[in-house]
Length: 313
Image (tube, rainbow, N blue to C red; front, side, top):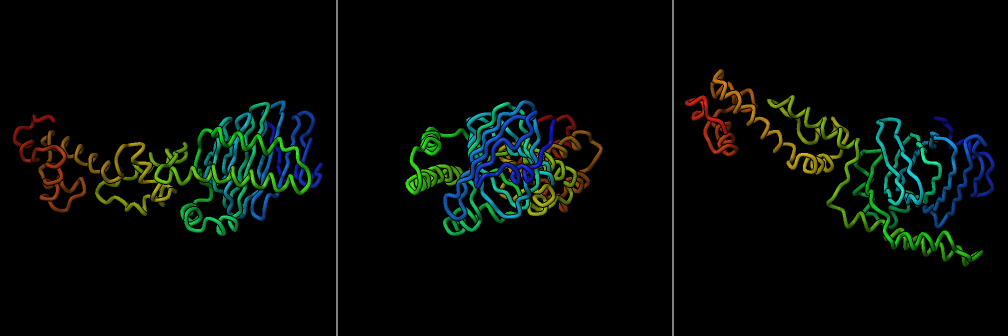
């Protein structure tokens, strides 16, 4: 798969805000158009027709940016260099993501790729969404976040069609596009408000959740706090807790408690340990606390299992 560098392409065959046919002939053709809608708001249109799969290394993003990507044709993937986190841009879907200090590359496997991006600077977001957006998403110590991945709505498709097929020229065109872009922007950002209590888990997030479970189960006598656990797997506390609910239908410590009680039940049924030993092995300093937790879980007391050695729940 051929590897190319976006910084080299932008410096060549560039006419103001239009870059075209900067790919080598054997790779294919490309067209990129940038429209500065307002300070801090960039509209970017990209059309690629490639003859063979390529990897396009992106320019390092030093600033915080929110990016809304509408994939009209074809599928691409962004892979972050530092943690290998993946963001998908699939045909017919809108991807909303946050980038900060990111270095990565895009994989292009389809022959035709048509995408539109709205790129919003941190300053623009601070001016317009100080509490509802910036504080919620920008300061949770992740340099790459997927905020929303959903089918592009019919309303957004109509607005995008109006923008791309505008026949006006000069200042009238600028005013028209600005109005349509902000209408499109309001529709897409509304998704974040509608789904403020929902999250999307990509493969990176799911693997982090699996790792968190393993850490908990390996440290049942002295499990880490939610804060420490989130740091260990590089997720926010919110995504960690909600991710457990999605994957395991339980909170981290509900899952851990169930695991500890099942271990305790197996040890009781083996007849090899007394109650004090089992309580200590599953993280309880006092046998009474363990007995109460066990009874709450199974509606039977540990001593009753020891008496029969055959009680199976």
